[in-house]
Every structure is written in structure tokens, then in C-alpha cells.
Length: 441
Image (cartoon, rainbow, N blue to C red; front, side, top):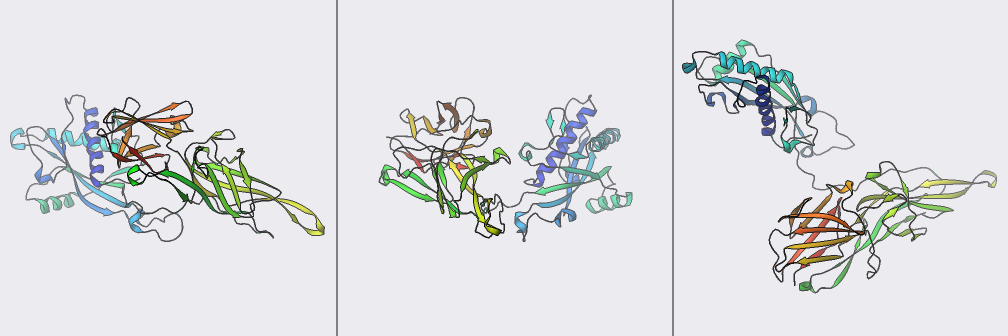
């Protein structure tokens, strides 16, 4: 729940004051002015205004020492920085012109009522139709707790005596807690641990060491235009097979030991399925003692297979000899291994000369599936493109489901001239297509 910087907190507080004061006083024609400069620099005119000044920041001692999840010592630069912010709220008006403090006192009263009625700001905090938290901070579960500071008259006088040689201003002091500043992004991520399965048996149980697959791609003509293969581990399996490719691009290989028994079954897991595990009944699945091979299909049981990260494990039924020669069947499960089912680009249709539209075909899945609404990313020539539901403008792409294929239509940022070569990459729920280059004839 971090903020990017302190200005986002100040923006939220000024939005609260402007909109709530306007709501409390319908007679106001416009939102009141709320400046955020040092009080002695605030502009004073004939109309009363407010100034909200962040004058002090400290680390929050409670959250600073909060235990972190997991074991081991986490690098401090990877943890959000907890802060307490201290604000001074003052009213301003040219008293020589007005000869009365009524407007300032009324405006400050409305400001204090606004904070009193909204001591906790969350993503659900709305003033009319206005979201109080800035749009850039939404989706992070931010919560701001605003508490008045009980400053004595003598302390307030000392504050103003230090800052400027003027009479103590009418002011209120506030403390804002729950502010966390965004840490540095992680430079590496460990492989996900899907489950821990360690049990005591007289015979070794099934164990998976690695998942493997073959990635097929073709270099641009300028680099020879040759077809190449890469061995991927963890596996990056194509969703569908191209008959011209060997070994199959959609072949998943799981290596380990003790993977065969009286009976054995391959299971899949996916984040969208929750805790449900799905048995694999694909047409081509072969089990050996040290490896399992399967050709990925577009369904597994009642589930539709979409590109993304999956977990696989083997459940083996074994017979062990117990006392007096009695055989008892024991079912044991292997550890979980993560692998990726990736989309594959099979065709790109170019329109125009120079090229002003590209239609990219990725067979085997529906890109309009609700689970993929925000999970498809596209980059051409290193520039990322924005998904749209209408006709793509420059720098945008749209998706459609045609027969059994996903078709992505994009409009390049600039038209592609003859002879141009641009790398193309598409990610679907984190799974990347094979290396691919757009070559304009």
C-alpha cells in the first residue's frame, strides 16, 4: 500500500478540503483556494483562503519495527518506508482590507469540520463524485489516518515566533499516519514454490526435478533467415502445435524420479482455478520412471487452457510390502513445478505501403476471455502499445476471436517503410510469444 512520494498525500488532503468545504457551504460559487506553501509565503487577498503546509516528517516507529513475512532478513530497500507527516493548516486574508477575521474563522471552521468528518481516507472515500485519493495511488489499498495535534497556545506561539516576527496566526496542527513510500523494485524474483511435499516412506516418492520444452523461432532474413530452436527450462510450451515443427512446440517434458507406479496421473493447477486441481486426460501423455511427456491441448477436463503460468505435479499409486507379505496401495504426490503455456505467433498480415496496420494471429485461445481483460501486452520495436476496444489509433491494438484463433490488430506509431525490420513481442498473462520479427517487404 505505498505512495510514490509525499506530494500524493498532500494532494489527497487538499482535495478533501476543497470538495468537502464546498459541500458544507453550498453558498460558495467555487472551490476555496488551498495553497501548500510555507505560511509566510501564502498570498493574502480580500477573500479568505487556506494554506496546508507539510512542516515535519518522521519515520513511523510502530510500522518501522513490524515483523516481515517469511524467514531471513529482507533487504531494507525492498520494504516500504513508513512515515508520519505533520501538517499546519492556516487561514489567510488581507486584514487591512477586510478589518475583520470573520471570513478566515469561518473558512478554518469548515476545514476542521471536513477533517473531523473524514478522519480516515481510503479508496472508498468520495466527496460527491470526486475521488479523494489521487488516481495514481488507487489499487494499492492505501489508508490515511488524520489526527489533530494537541498543541498548546504557548507551543503555537513559539512556532510562529520562530518562523516569522508576526502575531500568532489562527491555525490547526494535524498528524497523518499510514503513509508508506514505495520501495525500490525487486531486481530478481525466485521461482515460485507451489507446495511442499516431504514425507517419510520406505521407498523414494515421486519427485520432479525440471520441466522442459523446445522453443522454435526464425531469424530475420538479414541475419540468415534460418530456423532455430532453444531448450527452455522451466518449460515454455506453445499452446498449439505447428505440424512443421519438430520436436513439437507444444510438448511438455517433466523430468524426475519414481514417476511411475501401479497407476499415475498428471495434474495441473492455475491461479484462476483457485485450489482446484485438474487431472490431465490429453490424448498424448506418456509416463516413464524418470520422465513424463505430454502434448498440451486447449482444454483439460472442463477447464479452458489459456496462456499463463501453471503448476504441474504427478500423483502415483504404489504397492509396498508390509508385515506378513500384505501389499498396501499408497498414493503419493510429487512436488509442484511451475511452467508456462505460451501463445505462438503463426501469421502476421501487413496492410498498406508503408505498413499502417498489422493483423497478428495467435491460434488456440480466446483473447476476449474476461480473465485476460488486463493481461495482454504488446510491444513493437521496443515500444509498448495500449489496448483499445475500438478501432486502434497509432500506438494502440485491439483483440478479436476469429474461429479458434486470437487476432490482434495494431496500428504502428509510425508507418513501417519497405525493408524495415521490427521485433514483436506479445505477453498473455505473463507468458511471452517466441522471438519474432516483423519484416516489411
